[in-house]
Length: 124
Image (spheres, rainbow, N blue to C red):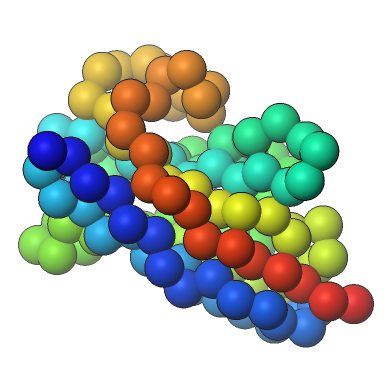
């Protein structure tokens, strides 16, 4: 069975940094595209970053420069580093996986597997 487990969230002051982790099992990162999504209360879930199976990365333009997605294929783990956190980054962060090619998609519907999320709270 496929399992995605996020960790690394927490409460931080604005300007700080966090590194989120997504430990995977049941898939290989060389064959699956991995993405990070976030959802703030009362809003739709939005994709913020992805790394495709070949290693290419893509970001939602609004977060490019502050967010960095990376992966450790040997550890089957994907990371999201967030720098210079702002209160608007407050959300539940989810990782997602899919093996189908969807041309650098950050749409929820294009990902079959999801983790339970890790909460990030940024205070001003």
